[in-house]
Length: 130
Image 1 (tube, rainbow, N blue to C red):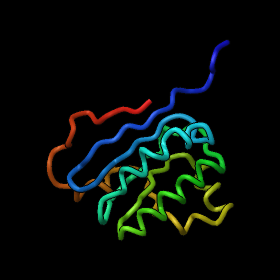
Image 2: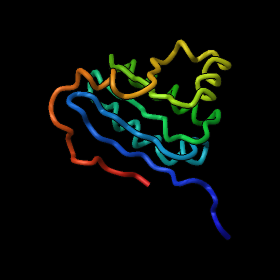
Image 3: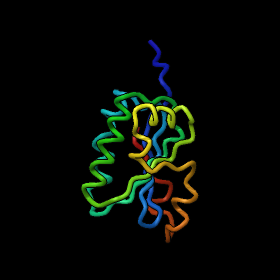
Image 4: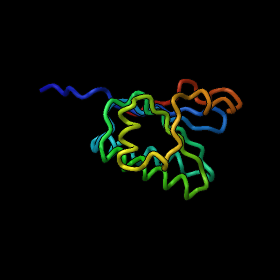
C-alpha cells in the first residue's frame, strides 16, 4: 500500500544567535508526535531565539496548533522569543479563528528576522530530521 502523505521533516540551522527550524509537510497529530522532542530540545537554553518557518507546511490541524502553543509556552518560560514565518493565508485565518493571532509573532518571510543575525550560518546546510 502506498503512503500518499507529503514528505515531512524538520531542518534546523543557526543564524548567529537565532535558531531557524523549517518544518515541511503536514503538521498533524502524527507529525507533532514525531517532532515534539526535537523542538523542545531547541528551547532548552536560556533566552532561546527560535524561528519556526512554516511556509513548507501543507496542512495544520489542532495537534499542530497545540504543538505551537506548547513550544511558545516553553520559550516564554525561558525568557525567549518565538517567531512564526507563515506564507499561507489559510494558516493565518486559522490562528485568527482560534484567537491565537495575538499569541504569536508572525512574519511573512525570514528577511526581517535574520537581518540582525550576525555571523555565518552554523552547521552548514543544517540537519534534517525525517
